[in-house]
Image 1: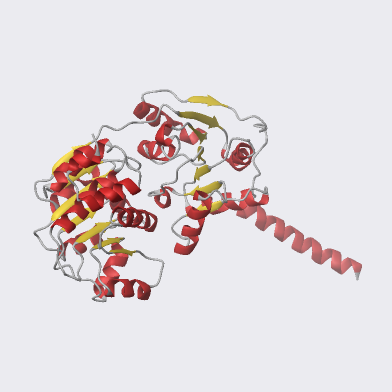
Image 2: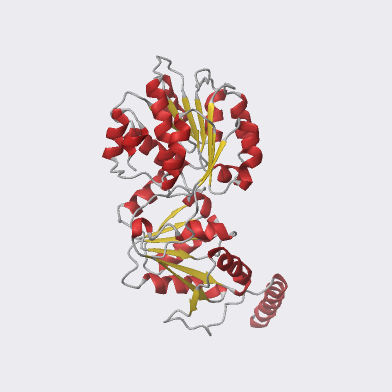
Length: 405
């Protein structure tokens, strides 16, 4: 099947050609014809499956077919992160490059004023994170009277990070007569949300490819205190050309980057405490191979679309088995080979069993060469021991001073 069979506007087909999309992916084959009829959609699709074009093309087609001179937005796409907003906007701009459709990208971490100027000129499609969108609504910069299509991308992640109240506020502002499309990695977490926001949606579930056969997975068992040393050892291997490292928290991500820097290994980092300019700079440096190591948290990494990642390192075990699949899927894309290493402590064994149950396979284990597994952990003295030490030295110092004089 080819994109020409969808009956898209010739200008959109030129955009498809510019992006070098040759054959539609399974989610595009399933979703685009349904979306073109105007029906609501509840779609299950993971990052990297082509779901962005699966909703963008029908949305853009609708706007081109029902042309209007309204300055108010006719399409609204809500996403959980600034990175994903930028990537969706980039693809929307490329697909519509032969048209006169206008895009606006709205997200936090940058000036409201610069975004106000964009909105002042009018936008056919707004791609936004919920919180910043409501900021502009409160300032009366956006009116939804002309809205025709609402898309929620990565709806499950928006629920995970607490956007449900914002989503409900936004939906109450929209016309009741509209097309709504919800996309999520899994449908179960968003069924209640879908019941609130859609009308008789068509459910589309594309069979998940659990892990590409081209990804070589390895579990590296070690105590917690050897992780930093182990990742440094891995990064000294010649084939570690483009490495995405996942840490559990922002603090652990920052600390790992500091450890790597002291070892002479340059690394970029992205998480929610980094400014927008810092996050964009880190992604661009990684994408352009000016830095070969990017450390990220799960939430910040959503929406990262970088080709050619050679290795994924799970410095910390993910909290859910599904997140493991998302993480390692960043490598081995487009039939390329890839490698995923996961550090496993004794506390992680339960999650390993869950992951292997999802994968329906055992993951090979080994020890990392060049690491002394007998190295003891540095033990920090407890508060009581510190107090006793300070007290003893204070009195000892006083008596010595008195004796000397």
